Amino acid sequence: MRAWSAPEVPVLPVVGPSVRLHDTASGGPVEVGGPETASLYVCGITPYDATHIGHANTYVAFDLLNRAWRNAGLTVSYAQNVTDVDDPLLERATTVGVDWRELALRETELFRQDMEALRVLPPDDYTGAVESIPLVVALIQRLEDAGAVYRVDDDLYFSVAADDAFGAESNLTREQMLQIFPERGGDPDRPGKKDPLDPLVWRAERPGEPSWDSPWGKGRPGWHIECAAIAREHLGAGFTVQGGGSDLVFPHHEMCAAHAHVVEPGVPFARAYAHAGMVAYDGEKMSKSKGNLVFVSALRNAEIDPMAIRLVLLRHHYRDDWEWTDDLLFDAVDTIAQWRQALSLGRGAPAAPVVERVLAAIADDLDAPGAVAAVQDWVDATLGVAGHLADTSDPAAAAQVSAVLDAALGLSL
Ligand code: ZN
Image 1 (cartoon, rainbow, N blue to C red):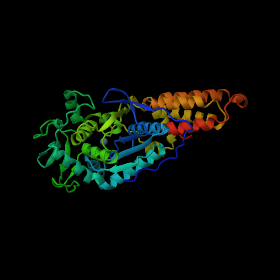
Image 2: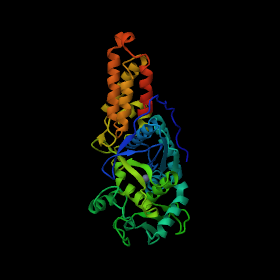
Image 3: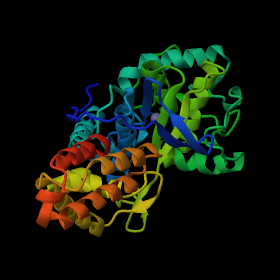
Image 4: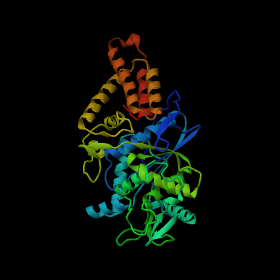
């Protein structure tokens, strides 16, 4: 599948520090990537509706990681999926009366445009579930060979008991897992399952639903096996970081890891697992079911500068949960105008310290608020000395600050 187009990113004259990230599995900071390469898998959208701020928050967070690695001189491999066949997509297509393929194409294209507007670097491999069905079938066959798959009626389930490390990604207790599982697509009460937590890997054809041939009859993939198959195909076993929103910690990322562990015992699915916080609006987490969504495309249609949207996201640490408000956006619009004014002077307060502070902040668990504060200090100093710039300031400052704003934070001003 075609990804979106890549923005031009300036190459900085200095090399950024190595990157540390909070790892959900170990519960603390770990150094990720290097010495020469790094690889990233971020779970993509199910294209049944437009990109909302919660999605944008996740993809911008991992865009900071991608940029930090590149600024540290690493070659990055980045893969992302599109779940272009799944229950929510089929349900939505039926509700609005369009073909599910048409809906998926339309919403995926809108997502590409939103990502381009927000200057998110595209993945190297952007892969749909439908085009990955042969990969999924091959992975289920390997799980079956390992004795980790069983039938319930005509559907196939994965046995979580087959993975000795099951639970090590989320660190949840079994009681917590049992509580969360049905809230996030699981079916613990289905009769015939060996363990209530076992996830579906192949759903046999149902009347009126799309299906594909497999050794087990016509059907379609489960969600976890889809990501496990795509990540392993494009990044290999033991890639650097598995990323997504914190609502994917369990069951999604735990199950992806479990599938991979069974086919390649002793090799971790990913070296680290990183999760972005949830964004609320009107007092509750943004979600389709609550109907409290703020769409990136709607803001763009209202002629809001995408760089202001991006700055609102950067002002929150990626692991925090926070609430979107219109005031945050208005503030960011004002700040962007002030920063552009400072950059337009050409000369400014010395650039080297701000460049160093921005790179160090992002390399330290993607501390975007720290990086934004460093830029604000430079802007304040530059505007404060504007009256006698010619004598006291660095003539190349604005160009250098512009470059780090773009390369590290994705803000092109
Ligand atoms: Zn995924």
